[in-house]
Image 1 (cartoon, helix red, strand yellow):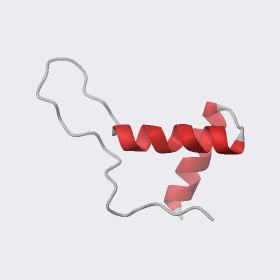
Image 2 (tube, rainbow, N blue to C red; image 1 turned 90 degrees about the horizontal axis):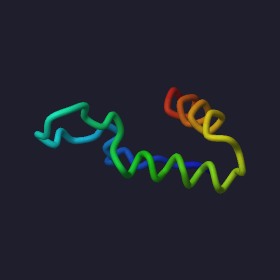
Image 3 (cartoon, one colour; image 1 turned 30 degrees about the vertical axis):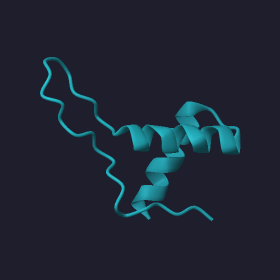
Image 4 (tube, rainbow, N blue to C red; image 1 turned 90 degrees about the vertical axis):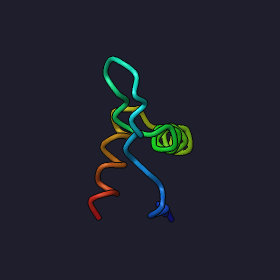
Length: 56
């Protein structure tokens, strides 16, 4: 069973620095990488898997 905390922020907070800002928060990136290792799938498959879970 997979459960996402509704309190978790998926978008990165603005840093106020010059240049392109991060799209996703560090917690979101860590969650995706953990799922990649846990299920033993490629990163491209992990992103598709997470996107489909978030649409549910």
